[in-house]
Image (tube, rainbow, N blue to C red):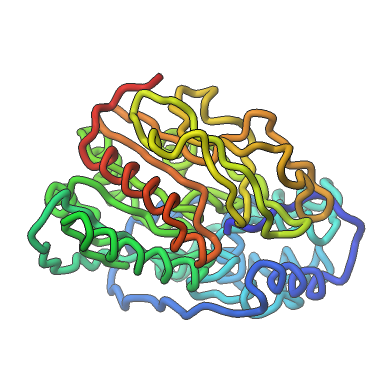
Amino acid sequence: MQCLYFHRTPRVPVRAALVALLCFITGCATGGAITATGESTVLDCPLRDEPYSTRTPLMDIMLSERASAIVNRHMGGVLDQLPPTFASREAPSFSAILDLHALAGLAGSPPEVLESIDAELAQLALTDEERKARCARYDADEPDLAIPAGGPRLLLFQKITGFLDAPSVNAATATLYELAAEHGWSIVETDRAGVMTPESLARFDAVIWNNTSGDVLTLTQRAAFKQYIEGGGGFIGIHGAGGDPVYFWDWYVDTLLGARFIGHSADPQFQDAKIDIEDNATGIGADLAPGWTMHEEWYAFASSPRETGATVIATLDESTFSQVGRGGQYLSMDDHPIVWTRCIGAGRSFYSAIGHRPEVYADEKHRRLLVDGIAWAAGGACKQD
């Protein structure tokens, strides 16, 4: 989402603040709903057995009447003031990619409030019903996928439990199918995380995470995907796949992506900025140098992925757009990568933070960058600069 940054602000009516934030992000549009799959057994979802704390996903706090009561008592009934898209207990919902620290930033709650909440939440013993509720947004439904002829073989993975930005997802999907037809790729899509088994993943050269948001894989599925990547598989992450304000899988964000989102341009949200293409070992974007100007929402990250060994493909010229984010947040990174690759074991990771505005998928240079990145992730030589 991509699109959220939380920091200490003066206390304001929480519902008003969240409604304003939601409208800023989505234009007050809402996405569809993904409902529980009716699993009769409790899946091995990552936080199923984790004690309650202020780091628990906000959705899981709201799924428990006991935990919700503690939070409301300390934070002035904040959970009862949330607008529907934040308050939803079913995915996709913003509540799946927030925790109480993020919420406290909006509400202007002092640190000692979180400390008191943490102490009380720690006293709650999880019930079986609460475990089941936590896991309802995960699935183990293995889809029956018929893979078309062609190559490379690409799995378009589109399960979303957090922020569903339907226009971005749909525009990217249409573009990927167009590019597949142009280049002879084999592409098939699913929103079922049950595809993340060693057997299913072995059928594909790379997996594309299209504007995904939220924690979507069980522990078993995480292990299968991690093994797939480290064993030589490819990953392509598009825009929102690297834009959640809170992550619950460190390997995904710190190793596979290599950078943590902190905010995006907001003054205004969409701006012209110069994209600079770097000479790099992968050859991605070589014919696009020196770069071009694009009108887009621009992400900023806590640190440059270059610092942890990524090969940077493209950076933003910070002199060409405003470094002010939401609420006056300062977004300058100095070194501001926006597209990069990483080698993960024998596997390859390509991430592009471009892709919020549907219009950018018609940009021919952006499309060529995606073609290069996908081709590399699906079988290029994995060496870093």
